[in-house]
Length: 244
Ligand code: SAH
Image (cartoon, rainbow, N blue to C red; front, side):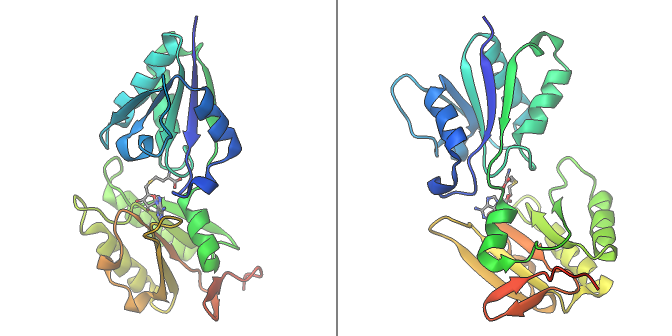
């Protein structure tokens, strides 16, 4: 008999932000599959098999989860945040498209609190008006596409949430992104560096883009760039509901 595959988001870090629906799925699981640091966030219990894998193994990890489900297991594939935002859900459907024999597996996608929402809540309401989200990783996307999207996001006056701003293997992209934003006249805009939100290492820094340095971001940082009307009130940042 076919098993099931549940693709679940664990939220940004704090266990209080794991939805009851995801907790219930984890309670019923026979197998949990995912990137090792996320699997480590799942409470272990007798009989639960944990399958932790390395980073950047998305497609093979998705295949492993589908294969276990095809063998009759109740599999939960975990991502941080939301599984549909720069995470595993898309990789599963990519694997599924290539393997028709798995298309009868019963699949569910359970949402989670994505990093930009947790970060925005800490800062106030910087995503309170129109916004977009850009993944700065160029592992699977050519850099010129990233650059074009940044420029057009500025032109459209979106607030911009930036995921994966900077890593050891990609030390320069975020500096280039800051230069593009400054060059597009965004130097006075508000920028928020939200580091490890909802974890004990959380740190939120708000400054103007002119003062921002690339080293302020790492892989545990979600960056939000305000739009042209974003305002500060005391320690809070918000996007007014009325666009000019
Ligand atoms: N699926 C995840 C995103 C995965 S991409 C989600 O929906 O949140 C990984 C990127 O997410 C990190 O590089 C960082 O930019 C962001 N991120 C994830 N957790 C975070 C946290 N607790 N605090 C700040 N940023 C976080």
